[in-house]
Image (tube, rainbow, N blue to C red; front, side, top):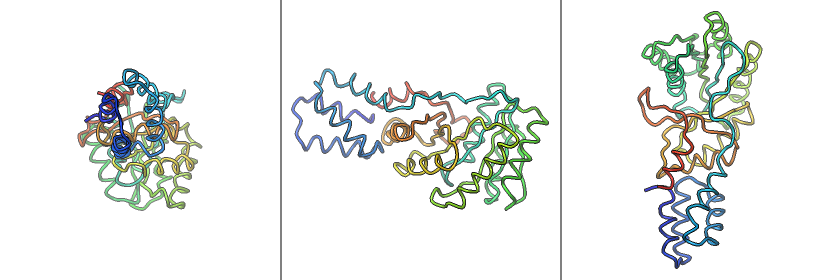
Amino acid sequence: MSLFKKLFTTLKSGSISQEDWDVVRAQLIASDLGPKLVDQLILKCRSLKPEDARKSITEEVSSWLSTKPRNILNSKAETKTILIVGVNGTGKTTSAAKLANYLKSQGNSVLLAAADTFRAAATDQIRTWARRIDVEVVFGEESSDPASVAFNAITKAKALNAGYLIIDTAGRLHTKQNLMDELGKIVRVVQKQSTIDEILLVVDSTTGQNGINQAATFIEAVNVSGFIVTKLDGTAKGGIAIAIEKATGLPIKFVGSGEGIEDFTSFDQDAYLAGLFD
């Protein structure tokens, strides 16, 4: 069922009881749209004629999405640098590899950096992905300074004249200040050597409203420029995309939809909205 199907069905019935509105509200909140946006939408719906509902609601929801560019922001630097950040378990390392594959498929040369040095499995994981997609990766010893790995990666990327450098940083709890401070250190080290074109925060859509809390903390710690959302669809839990863009003003740039290396695409706003309404 599309996210708004129940709402449209209720509006078409003409006579709507408070119980009907309660059912609609519960269904929309369950979609991770969030109580505040749900109440705002229902207030608007109460004043609409059934024949005007679809157009008005589409316009309202569209206005909540970010108006910032969804393409990768490229500086004039020969090597464009992208940092991948996020909480452990969101698909961060896999998303870094998928983004590398995506950019390579468009004819770009790409270098990966395994700056998640605290989790040995992360380095092994990204090295495995790199072999599969035939992309070189810079890595350090387990528990080594992640900022030093990032520094070495920038040096190598410039030497190779790589089109893109993608740095996978350590997953961290957004509630742990020392880990967030360390992320800031990586950013400062990178910026001494290169412009950072993007800092992309990976959010697991199934985490619901907690994903918005994560986003707020990462945005405060570093200059997040956009999102990669994993496990996103336009049905049961599709509301999180609207909620996170409305809350932050930042765009979702890429979507991961499965385990395969090809299950990664740029975020299509029109297709997403169509999935929510149809």
